[in-house]
Image (tube, rainbow, N blue to C red):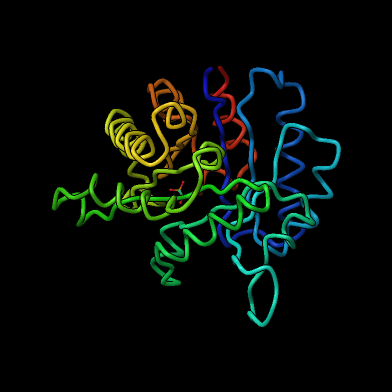
Length: 257
Ligand code: 13P
């Protein structure tokens, strides 16, 4: 069975409550007349403080799902500044982005923490979007594939094949994030095929064929059609171009099958 594409907008640290509501309204309006059967799954990931108002705005809209940009793996307790998965579930959040390179780089998140989050998210019945990607230095040193394979193996450690099947992976080369330098589509597809091989080693090839693997890094309306035409790219994790309803809608339209 064909993998259903996903177009996810990672708003990063942008948009206060009123800006988030305005953007959500624009997205809802933009997808209103599009046929749900041919649409990709659409996901938006606002900042924590906008999740509740955005979830209210999405009531009655069955075309857009809500994601958070992070979570903590413990269910509750003395973890100042953190948010549990149940708290997110309470707000109709169904996806959680984990292991984004910005969290790895600026907040020192490591593979072990990302694995704990992935396990807890799946146990709670939500979907992790597990990010991986290499730096420019790693690419130039020729260690892209081994680095990414290691990130994926560690993120999926101890997760049953049935749960691996439910995960979404996002390949985001760090040098392509926010730089305007999109990774060549064929190269992105090649790396994603390597990721699928790694998933097959962890959970078997039947499961690997079902896992959705997205590309992220300077995705724009002008790049999405070629990206979606690749055999193994199942959608996009979009940063900058998801902050305007018009460009996000154009990307969604480019992913219609
Ligand atoms: P840009 O689309 O702004 O390059 O960001 C990509 C990204 O990091 C999405 O998570």
